[in-house]
Image 1 (tube, helix red, strand yellow):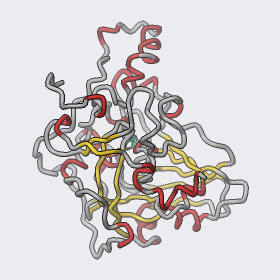
Image 2: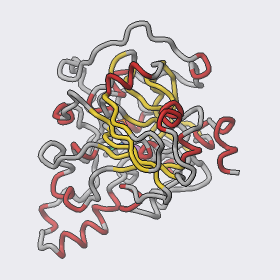
Image 3: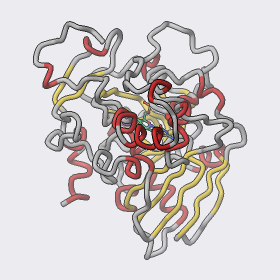
Length: 328
Ligand SMILES: Nc1nc2c(c(=O)[nH]1)N[C@H]1C(S)=C(S)[C@@H](COP(=O)(O)O)O[C@H]1N2
Ligand SMILES: [Mo]
């Protein structure tokens, strides 16, 4: 951690205190682990996240196939800032199944993405299991450039490839009593070891959820790719949610199951820290996280995070015109 601070440090979230897990490390997990007879000296307690792997490693292990004939949706082609370097978006990740740091891209290559199936179940007229290839043939695949905002106050701009969630909603036809949707990520402790000793205390598998009206909004997107190629495993291959007006944790990676439900489901981060990770979790500069301000964000770039550009956070991450009416 650098000793020299940039000016106005109170405006700029500290990457070491904005970790999604540092709360756990310090409190609930400590209690649990001490209760379990694990000595504190064994634990990675500090919440010090190594920042992303900034080395210029070739995308050897993580390389994926390019899409051909891709069209960029002109409604979602531009944002007010530059597209993040592909090398950063694919090397600075959150994927707790593969560890608690940002440098999980190599570990994530263990994700078994071949013959991937996505089961859609619950309160729908047409429950079915999609093969990932069928899904990409059935729905028109397009490119969309979206802002991306993690609850930890870092932000990127990513050109996603995929299809709007509302097409899948229409395909399975929710029943009238369906109100919520739960998304479940792949989990197998032999393949997704989690963040070390802490892992056993997490409510696996990773799940997320939203209201059906949110899922049916134009912006809600299932990504199968980024930067013109199929999703690298570290970014949630072969299918992940992208909900650009909500904090990044709302978008589950490597989805295996989608369920339509009557009641609001329990979700991963909301179960771990209900005061820190709300179910709704819309990006909101005026609603601080209990441990840090959300008034500004750091734009992920090269070098140390202290040198990254800081900008004001926008309500709904700049997507109010699309989604504010959902919350009126
Ligand atoms: N299954 C799963 N999905 C997940 C996460 C995770 O740990 N596991 N992390 C979330 C968080 S906190 C963020 S910010 C984004 C990060 O996506 P990226 O690595 O593609 O930038 O994925 C989200 N989806
Ligand atoms: Mo996040």
